[in-house]
Image (tube, rainbow, N blue to C red; front, side, top):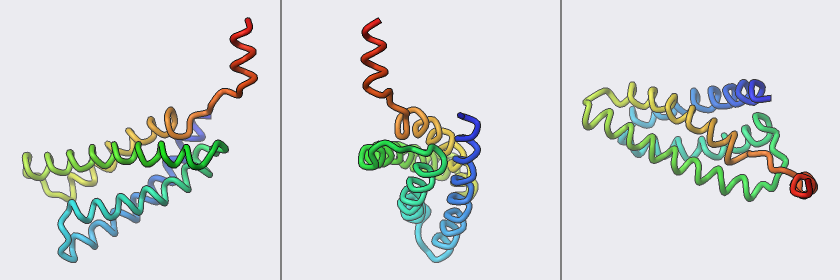
Amino acid sequence: MIRRQLARWTIVGLATNASLYVVYLLLTGWALTPRIAMTLVYIVGVGLGFVGHRQWSFEHTGPTAGALGRYVVAYIVGYLVNLAGLSVGTDVLGAPHQAVQAFMIIVVAVLMFVIQKYFVFRVQARSEDVTAGSAS
């Protein structure tokens, strides 16, 4: 199951991130700062990703509101990791923002799969399974 989820998650993520990276490059080319451009594409990516990952990658059938709340929390964490990496990479290390952001996409992607698999779209035990397990 995890292989199929990872494969589907990768397809959704690659399609979303590749298109959003192009948008990021266009926005920075149109005089937006890298941090503002990253923020804008991040927000759009969260919405697109939630739909794709919930419905196809993890086939989550639990309550949408709970999953969406956890998803937003996860992506706030991911955003802060991305922002910190972009800042350190460009301001401290002096690397070009294009390369740093491309690297951060990979770092945040790995983090997001783990968080989505085990926190956002986790499979919850059914109540009768929990009750039966506690009776033995």
